[in-house]
Length: 104
Image 1: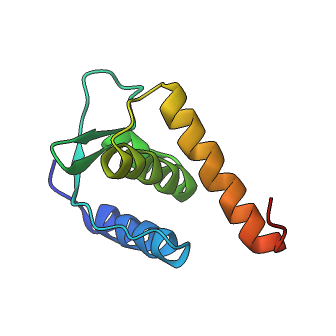
Image 2: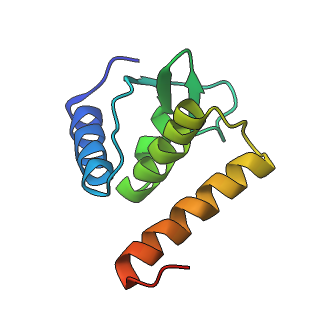
């Protein structure tokens, strides 16, 4: 699917948010339509694929989907796995430690 100005703006704003959050986000992003309409994104061949459906949701959902697919590519963790769960929990706890200055 060709990116619309809305897609481009949402992707750029989402990338900016992730980068301001300390995530070096440099993966190319394509917009597509998945056969399974419930899929919002995929990490494939070093690229992030975001579904057209993802953009119908709030911008927060685009950020969440981009972050999840980034994690798959950056850390090579499989979808729906304990490794992915551990990665996300560790990322959250690290952010909270930094914010609160409480180091566990």
